[in-house]
Length: 248
Length: 223
Image (cartoon, rainbow over all chains, first blue to last red; front, side):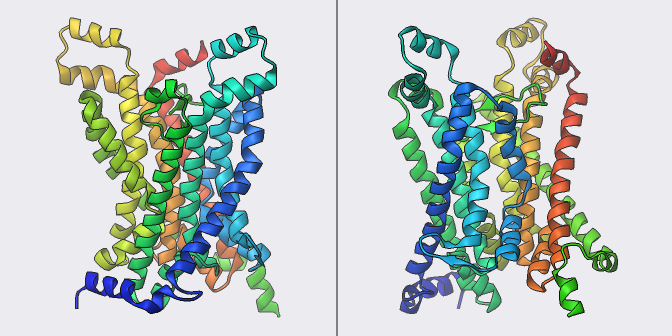
C-alpha cells in the first residue's frame, strides 16, 4: 500500500475524529493557545508601542526588540518555561508555559510594527491635524491610527503566523495542539500520522495568514490601498545600517 | 540525590567537559546548515529578484509564492519531508532555504528599485550595456539593502535550525532537545546560549561586512 493512500485512510478513520485525542479537539487546543497568546500580546504591546510611536520616543529600543526576539529560538523559550514552571494547566489559556512562551514570541514583532507604523506617519498629516485644532488624543485616534492600521495589522499577522507555527512545538513540552500528531506519530513510528499532523498545521497557518491578510486590507483606508498592495510586515534592519529604515 | 542535583543544575561544568565532542559537532552542524541555507537562498533569490525588478509583473506572484513557503511552520515542513529525504541534512535544508526566499527576494527588488533613475540614466549615457549597468552600478548600490535582507534571513534561519533539532537532526536545537528529554538542564543552557551567541555574532559580522562592502554609504549615513 502506498503512502498517500495510508494518509487518506488515517484521515478517514472515525477514531481520529473523536474525543480528546481527535482532530477537532486538537484543532481547538491549537486555536485556543494561539488566540489567547495573541490577544494577550496585543493588549500588552500595542497600546504602549502606539503611544511611544506618537511621542516618537525610545525608537531605537522599539525597533531593535524584534531583532533580539528573532535571535532567541522560539522553542528555547518553551523548554525554559517547562523547566521553570512545569506543566501547569489553567482554564481558558490551557498550558501556562505554552501561553507565556507564545506571548513572549508575539510581543517583539508587535512592538516594532506598532511603533514604526505610528512613528512613520508623515509630519504633514500631523501638522495639518494640529492646525485644524485637533487635540493630541484626536490626532492619535483619527489621523495616526487609521494611517498606521495597515502596518500595524501586518505586525499582528506576522506575530500570529509565528504563534500558530510555534504552538505546534508546544507538544514537545507535553502540551496539546496539532503538534501532538507529529510528536506522537514519531514516538510510535506512524508516518501517516506525522504527515497528517503536518498537513493540518500547514493548513491552519495558511488560513491564519490569509484571514489576517484580508483583515489588513479591510482595515486599510481606501485612499491608501494601492500603496500597500504588497503589504507584508515591516522588515526592520537595525539602525546601525544606513538603510535601517522600514520596508513595508 | 547527588546525581539528581547535578542533572538539575543549569551549569554543570563536568558534563560540558565530558561532552565537548557533542557540543562542538552540534555547533558545527548548525553553522553548516545556516550557511548552506543562506547560500542556496541567495542563489535562487538573486536571479528571481533581478528578474522581478526588471519585469514588474513577476514581483507579486513571486512574493505570494515565497510568502506561502514562509507560512508553512518549520516543524511541519521538516516532518513532511522526513518520509521523502529521511533524517538527513537535506530534510533541514529544503525548508530553511525556502524561508530565506521571501526576505531575500523582497530586499533584492527593493534594493534595485532604490537606485536613483538619474544614476541609471547617467550610466546609459556613458554607453553601459544593460548587463554591465546591472553589475557595475545597480547591484553595488543595492548592496546595503540586500545585505540587510541577508542579516535578517541569517538570524531567522539560525532560530529555525534549532527546531530541526527536535526531529533528531543534529544542530544546537538537538542539544536543547536532549537536555529536555534526558533530562540534563546544562544541555539546555548550552544549546540556548550558543544559539543566541551564534545569531548575535553572525549579525555583527554581516553588519561589518556590509560596511566594508559599501564605503560610500558611511558618509551618507553621517550627513
